[in-house]
Image (cartoon, rainbow, N blue to C red; front, top):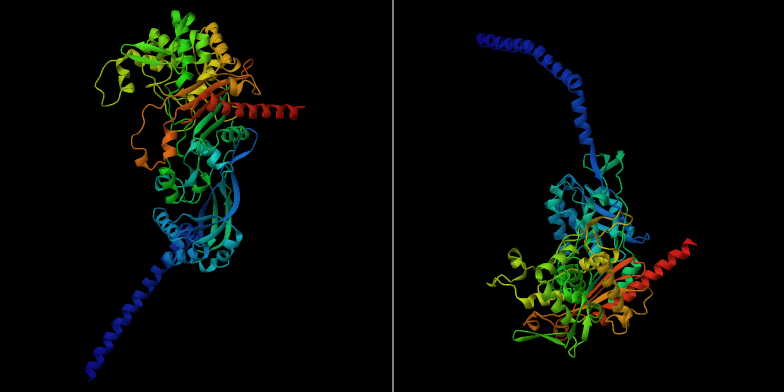
Length: 609
């Protein structure tokens, strides 16, 4: 028994000896670690502590506004409240979103949309949940923020388009950043320009991000803002557009489908660019309903199409100005001579009709332009050939994109009597390799394979008015004119065409006389009626009503011109889809536009006194 006690005491003494020896070592190690934490790694650990206590949050800039040439708001910012959420700070995302959905009365579809937006966004960045809210809507949320970590209510701004339908194709719209945008560096709660000026000038309108340093508690709730770097507001853009003239053009078109373009013939500034029907761009701001988008897609009038720049149509008799200029330049004998129009031209076994069945009798180029005689230009085109006509069209700016800062833009089609151009004028199923005389004759009056956009026609007539300078259309006011090229044209030839275009309006038998003879400014112009040759055989199967089918078989109506004749300022192109006749349907729209332009000029003169 005594022996066991002795052995036990010995083991205890060994343990105590080990403890006495290890204790100083352990205390030394602890002291060294404390020294490392307090001195060697102090700055690093202090920074980590600040990161746990402080958050760097980006502050969105206010987007630059867009105004017309007189300062009227086209895309403006309105003050409102918005609800944001930073996912990584939220304890239970589903519960939080359900609570917000009840308080803000979100639909199940909207809630599902928000869930998808959160999944594709960074968890450490604010995500916009709702916008354009009144204080009455957000005050219950603001009062419960201490129960909603990661949720915040901010006073901000939202985009509004006062002339939404009227300027939809020109101004465009915004929508929240998509995944491709966030991959490119945008934040999930930023609005990005998708179409029109909003897209083309995104870099100028967007502005620069700011940042604020926030102190947060252990639950991620903001306690205070300790530092703030303010964002830089986007640039304010003043467009050349005149909202009042745009309204006048829209009122004159009424409920008809079409486009109106007005250009300054010296600077290329676009004073009016209207495409009807339009669409409500305000619907895009907080997420467009899929039903509305589908309704626009299904609409037979295609309101999403910018007819001024994207849609190319046969220019009809407005193209006779180009054929006439080509004839004068080439020295064709008919260009300075006469011919007889009996109402048709015999070609092989067919008759090519003039629009006037009884004919125009003896006509010169001057008479043929005023009366819009088809037979005269059939014969002139036949003398010139398609290559000469095509070269003239290209020289005056047709068959190419204008370069306007709106995308996409159609280039139209100018067929030519050259092998590499065959694909542009024949269908894919066609096997023929020959261009027929009749096709050249048809093209010489602006029909057949030849197409142009209303913007191209406006620029072309501007070049006729300014002496042959083909300009780039400018959307911004006050910019320097950009001359893309000069047309080699004899001033005498140009003057004879201009005189005939004045006769179209001035002479009692001119095709635009009734609509424009008493316009506020003197006008020179040319009408056009484009035949709708290729018609769908199953329009009714597509859901079109009998009235719609009947209207879709009507001709397109054109008018192009410039004013005042003695001292030209503006060029005008009017296109009415399935409108009927250029003189009776398109020219009156030009008269309304000129009236608005004259009123604006008078207003400015009075203001300058």
